[in-house]
Length: 278
Image 1 (cartoon, rainbow, N blue to C red):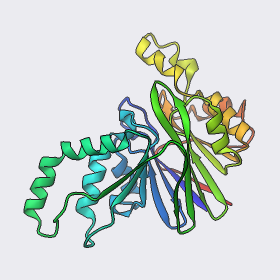
Image 2 (tube, rainbow, N blue to C red):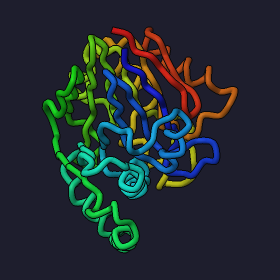
Image 3 (cartoon, helix red, strand yellow):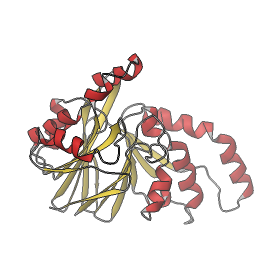
């Protein structure tokens, strides 16, 4: 079984009820964090996961709302890992990830220096291991395999989606993208497709060009559902709702998705959990 928890279902606009985009995936005894939007560590703590318990951080792309808590994650993992000579945290993302991580560590260089000076058992900066990919297999450990493929979020490029497989179960994390053949191929036959969604019917009528612009590089609810249908996925898990999913409007979103996808549709608040069976 693969367990998916929507840690953060929000957007770049701060929301008191929704953390930034981030999804927790548990598979084969391993724990993967996909993207790290604002508030992710608080949400992870609510399901009993700390930064030191992560097997790897997977980044779909480098938009600010998807990496807002990167610095906090790196430092928190460092200061809450008490084993001597801890293994580096694997960070897997598209090209540009290493530069971003290096810049984040530089931004926290004063903090790192203070802690090294104060704690005798901290004798090295945070241990990080960055791997950059645009396609292919990126992980194969203890019965869990992960591969990536390009997605289309231009002008944000490159961007990638992740397919996690364990014990016959599979889940695909699409990130921000419009429909594209490479995502269709990555998601083919998946047990679950976790896809970001926007209500283009609402956003297109907002009298702010900057907000209307997001329609051209995100999938609508219907487009995400159509991707799930083409891929033959069993479950569509919607997240990263724009505008925010308002209590009482769940059926509106579900109906839009059901117009294109006949499988199981999951949506909800932060901490919504979905089990994916083999």
